[in-house]
Length: 605
Ligand code: ADP
Image 1 (cartoon, rainbow, N blue to C red):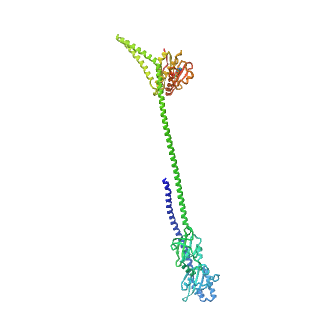
Image 2: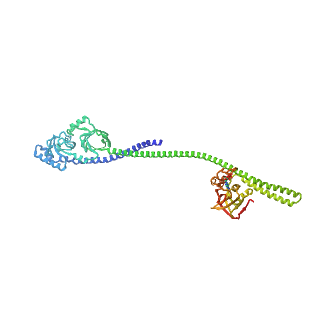
Image 3: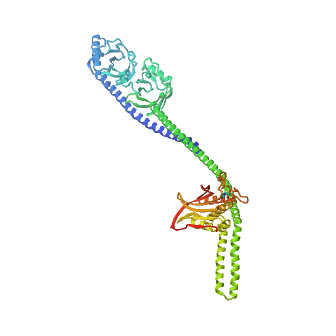
C-alpha cells in the first residue's frame, strides 16, 4: 500500500525531470536550427539588397561625365536643350529600369528629369534640403534613402556632382525604387526588415510596420527626423519591441501582440558603407508549439503509464483480495472439517464404547449360554465321568488284590484298563475346557468332518440317555472351510442338543447330520424327527432370548448365528418336508484336499 502511494510521486518526479530535460533539449535543438536557417535567409536578403543597390551606384557618376549634362547645366534657360536632356534621361532610365533620374542645378532645382512628361514630374522641384544634394555639392558621391517628397514612394538615392573646370555645376541623382525588394521577400513565415540608425523600419515584408520605430524614440530624435524630411510628413509611431535589439541572435518581443505570437528570433546584419541594418525576425511560435506538443505527448504517455500502473495495482489488489478470501474460506473449511472430525471422533469413540459394551454383553451372553448348555449336559457328563471313576476304583482294587496274590499279569491288565479310562476322562475334560473359551478367536482353514465327529462325541451321552438314533452322512472328500473349530463344534453340539430336546415327546427319535457341497459352499444340516417349528416362530428363532422352553435362555441360536456370520457363513431353519426341523449352516468353501471315506452310522443304543 505504501508503495502504491509512492507511485504517483515517483511518476510526477520522473515526469518533471523528463519534461525539463526534453524541453531544454528540444528548445536548444529547434533554436539552433532556427538560427542557422534564418542566418542563411539573412545573408541572402542582405546580398540581394546590396547587389540591387550596387547595380545603380555608379550610374550617376557615368552620367555626370556626359557632355549633354554639362550643356544642360550651362544653358539652363534653353528649353530645347532641356527637352533633349529630359529625353536622354528618360531613355537611359528606361534601359536601366531605375525609378527616376534627374539633374539638379547648384540651387537644388530640378532642371531635367526622366519623368519630365508624367504628372508627378520632378522638373522644377527643389531638392536642396536633401542631404545627398548638400553632400554632392561639396564634390562627394552621396547616397541616401528617403520617402519621395513629391512621389511619396520610398527610394534610395545615389547622387554625384557634375564637375567642370574645378567647379560643381550641378548634381545627377538616381532614385531607386525599393518596393521591388519587399515583393521578393513577402509571403514568408519570417519578417525581413531594413531599419535606419534610429531603428525606424524603412523596408519590410510586413507593410504595417513601415515607417515605425522598433523602440520608442525621444522627442529630440523625432524632431530631427521631421526636419530632415526623410520620411516626408509621416508620423513615426512606436512598434514597442522589447529585448536585446542590438544583439544577434536574440529573442525580442512585440509587446502589442498578446500571447506567444509576439516573440521572435532576431538576427541582424549591418550593410557595409550604408547606414542600414538588415534584420530577420522569425516567430518562435513553431518551437513553442513543438514544445507544447512534446509536453502534451509526454503528459499523455505518463498519464497512460499512470493509468496502466493504477489498473495493474487494482488488478493486483483484487487478486490479493481474492486470495485472502480463498485463504479465509479454506481456513473456515478446515475449521469446519476439524470441528466435524472432532465431533466424529467423539461419535466414533462413543460408538466404539457402545460396540465394546455390546461385544462384552454378547461374550457374556455366550458364556451364559455355554454355562446353560454345560448345565444341561452336566447330568450326562457326571454320569460319563462317574462310570469310568467307578471302573477305575474297581480296577485299582482288583489290581491291589492281584498284586497281593502275586498275580502280576492280571494286575497289569487292570492297570492298562485304568490308563484307557483316564485317557477317555481327559478327552471329555479337554472338550469342556474348550467350550469355556471366549469367542474372540482367529479363523483358520479346517476340515469339517472331524469337527462334526467331535460334536457327535460330545453329545453321545445325551443321545444315549434320550435314546435318540443319529446318522452321519458325510462326503468322501474332506471339506475345508475357514472357521474356528471349537466354536463350530459348540454350534453343532447346540443344534444336536436342541434336536434331542425337541424330540422328548416324539415316538420316533432320529437325527441326521449331513455334510455336502451346495452351490460352492459347504453345507452342514441337522435334521430331526421332532414336531418341527410353527410358522410364526420361524422368523424369530435367531432373535436373542427367544425361547419356547421353560428353562431355556433363548441365546443358543442367536449366538450361533453371530459366530457363523463372523465366519462369513449363514445359518437358517426350516421345516423338513417329511417330518421335524432342519437347521442348515453354510460356509465359504476353501478347498478339497484328498478323498476319504467317512460315512458313519451311529445309534444311541
Ligand atoms: P433355547 O434352546 O435356550 O430355547 P435356542 O436359541 O437354542 O435357545 O433355541 C431357541 C428356540 O428354537 C427354542 O426355544 C425352540 O423353540 C426352537 N428350536 C430350536 N431347535 C429346535 C428343533 N430342532 N425343533 C423345534 N424347535 C426348535
